[in-house]
Amino acid sequence: MAEIILVVYLCWVRPDKTSSGVLGCAPHDVVGLPELMELAIVLTSTVGRVAEERELTPMQGRLLCGLAERPQRMADLAQFLGIEKAALTGLVDRAERRGLVERLPVSGDRRAIQVTLTDDGGKAVVAFETGVASALDELLEALPVKDRAEFRRLASVVVGAVRTG
Amino acid sequence: MAEIILVVYLCWVRPDKTSSGVLGCAPHDVVGLPELMELAIVLTSTVGRVAEERELTPMQGRLLCGLAERPQRMADLAQFLGIEKAALTGLVDRAERRGLVERLPVSGDRRAIQVTLTDDGGKAVVAFETGVASALDELLEALPVKDRAEFRRLASVVVGAVRTG
DNA sequence: CGACGATCGTTCGTGCCATGAACTATACAT
DNA sequence: ATGTATAGTTCATGGCACGAACGATCGTCG
Image (cartoon, rainbow over all chains, first blue to last red; front, side):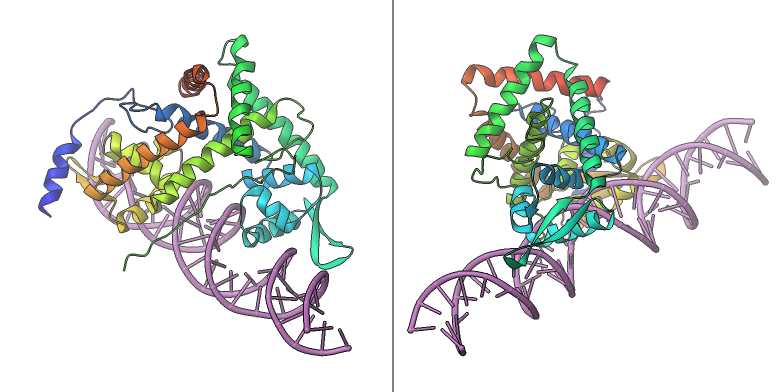
């Protein structure tokens, strides 16, 4: 209990505001951590906001995007989303309950199912994708025009490297 | 005794499959959506992986980062993290149970509390921040050296614009 | 053909994160 | 002294995620 007093002492340092914002890590900016960590949060919350406006969760949005590409089986979809199959079961359950996706049998393998978009799901994914696109475009409007494409290019290099990594 | 909770937000990317990668949206690449949405996922899962290695959740990492800057009261912290006060109560409960933070009274306002890092919490946040920094550095190694600083610069412009927006 | 291991998806138990509404205790202003 | 505002918590609900265990089916191999 004596250490509490010590801690209290520390508390009074730094009334300072101006601090590092959304994420707030490392006011001292040791290694350039914050930009990218805050960028992650800004991008993620932007996508989350769009999803919420469309009455989706971000994960449901990703699910629908995956299915927009093509119908998929549970195992592939799980790997695609980076989650366990068990988690995907619940995700698909909820999406199915909302009429966004369907489970269809796979001819030739009675264990497997194919998850597909319903009509409603198709509409939802189009709305979601266009919403995300425009929200992210707005974000980039903070940059001078000439830098926007460059930023996208660098982003896709980073993403591409992870993908092939 | 120590119950250790691991929340894995891994997103191990598929070997290849030629598809549109981590997120898998829009195979047609309509408007340049995917780069930034996939970037969000790559960054977020990188932070998540680092957190997991340190036996934290990403949100606990953010909480600790906020407190590393200075002790804060619940309301400020909630705004800082972008969540409701009610959600923060649970977050702080769990962090307190794990000995990472403490609730201290605020002299002059008996309703309020000040959340502060414990010694363990201080160590944890340093480990987390350095881990995140080096993981994100590794990510940028995919870029030619001259582009890395530029990418960070553009990122911080975007983030800065959101913050002041 | 029949047994056996691998694969597919689900269920179960647990835990984290988040919300909104309702609540307690305290502060403050009139 | 009374009424209103603020600080934080509790409660009910729900989405997301894990690992372990499970039933059903598939393939293979003897």
